[in-house]
Length: 208
Image 1 (cartoon, one colour):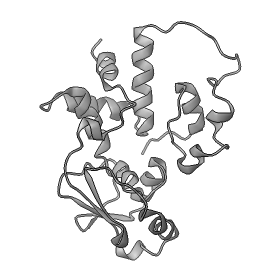
Image 2 (cartoon, one colour; image 1 turned 135 degrees about the vertical axis):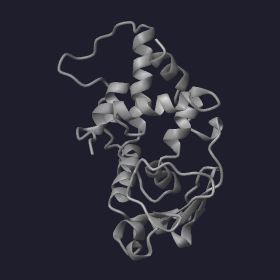
Image 3 (cartoon, helix red, strand yellow; image 1 turned 90 degrees about the vertical axis):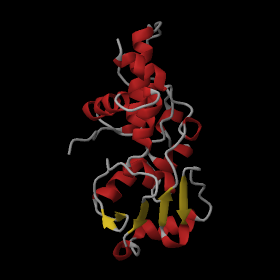
Image 4 (cartoon, one colour; image 1 turned 30 degrees about the vertical axis):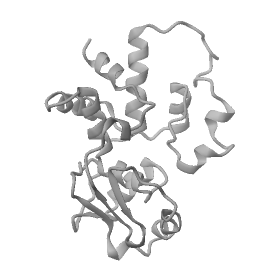
């Protein structure tokens, strides 16, 4: 399975904002974006006005990198979002939010989406009692996500169990900290999804 293997801090610097791709490190002074917020590259900061295309491209890249999805898969989500009822941009974010790796992250079982994807790929989770190792698996209302019983003694989940009591899951999810489980109550509304992402610019980019 293809995935980005470069420095994720470089991505934050390129987009000019924190994408919180390294979990708790992003909240400390070790954050590379805090120490060096300029774009990566050896030629320094070039100040130039960005046109409509550039603005749309940067927002598309920002959304794609927040959810750690490569270009072809991201475009497939956009096409699928346009084929269902509703607003295309909101549908796109909803597809991304209901990916299994994102739900695991939202429930607090991992400190970043990258860690959540790794935990899912290693088969630590079950959906409705069925072991699932596909990070892109799309959950539906009523689905129950839990750490498999045979994996609950692993170190990541021992640490997660200590922090889950104070973790606030989104309104569209229900968290059961003691059981290392959670459920999908409903599909997320726009106000329950990241407000710092402008999905309309992504729609405009692909609609050129």
